[in-house]
Image (cartoon, rainbow, N blue to C red; front, side, top):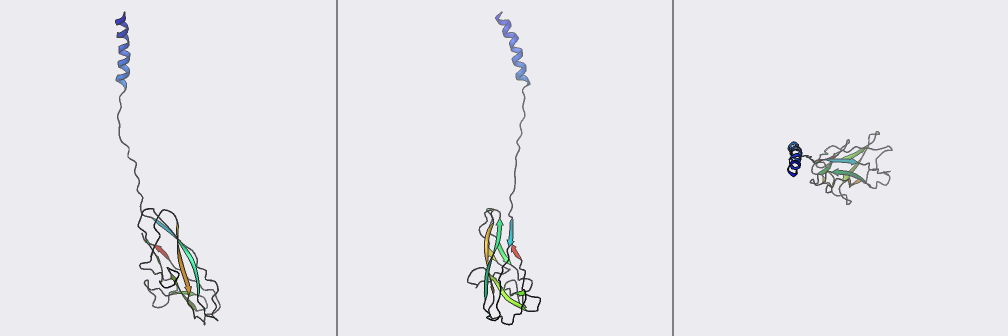
Length: 165
């Protein structure tokens, strides 16, 4: 009787093992992160220029640069402006604030607070080390002294900020 029970259980065990087959494959997810930057320029509000004293006026503004973490710090350049003076070049911009009254105020933008290094449109200034977050760069602006013939009016300019990456 013992042999009969063993024979009856053996086919049940074989049938479940014989039906369990598998096949496998690999799934390989991937992604690519490329160099990328965004830039935002903010206004430089010089306020009032007094032609009676002709004193220079200085002011600062910020440029916000956000670049992909791990990339080389790209240069940030500033264009000549919409109202550049005759003889202005990308390497040596001669910027002017323009008013509808026909006069201009000469000014320039600098990369440091000593107002000696003009921020130009050729090599520019290296942005802060990219870390994936917005980082600010200070722009130092100065309306030149001695512009005593300036007329009443509102003076403006537009300068293009470029990040090359």
